[in-house]
Length: 126
Image (tube, rainbow, N blue to C red; front, side, top):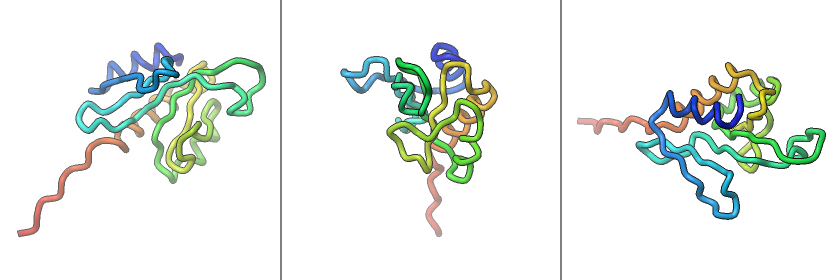
């Protein structure tokens, strides 16, 4: 899945708002819940060397929130890396160049959306 296909997937599945919060990085896109404004995905172009990949230039990746118990096993999948500039214990970066399996990417996106969703408010005890 590439960047455009990822954007289409998110648009077809979720109520969200996207924005570009950094003027110096216009190609970075933040995807937020429409209800609570929490990020569930961050798409960006980063140097290939940031992930130990061969070649010059940049690669499009998406950072996704991940269950801490699954971070290690998720990174065993092709195209899934420790998070770029985010907590490596609760986020992963996924390549948007076709390296990562589409099923893995959609699963991790769904999980990220769920993990960052608004929590139900507890009812006061009577």
